[in-house]
Image 1 (cartoon, rainbow, N blue to C red):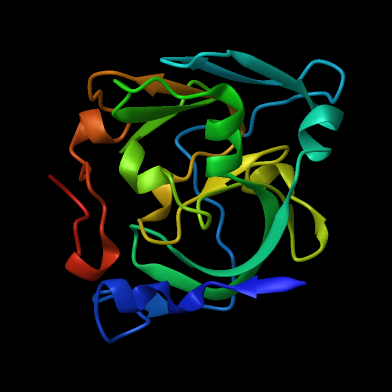
Image 2 (image 1 turned 180 degrees about the vertical axis):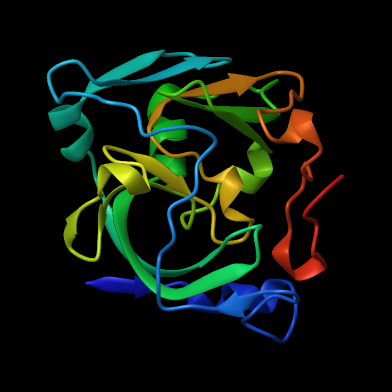
Length: 197
């Protein structure tokens, strides 16, 4: 069953397409550097920081976690949006619940294999539409789109959804990620056009 979450834009306004965006049927590939190489045998996903139970999952173990398939919209800060993407993965709250997030945790940092990081307040992550995605449109997520695992954040610009994710860190103080340190918006709300700080 596919859950449709494309209506979440109504939390922010009346228009599905955020201001300054153009709709595309393509799915362009953008990243800060090249696509990292990985193998199923060596890849692991780590959950650490302000948690009761640090976790580590192999590729197979992660894919065995409870998952959902959702239809989401995808908004890139460079000005394009792709509607009705079908993503399959593990909702953020599933991971948070398994790790037992400390009461003083307020922020999240996503870590990627290429050294990329991006941050969000815990309150902005703790929703079922924030997914750790491993399948796209019924197929394994292509490596150039972030496989084996990427985060999707349909209520934010897509730089908040790290590709090639291999860890999530729970923080007791806010920190900024790779693009946030370089002048991109820390809040990244597409309907307010929060592209740059």
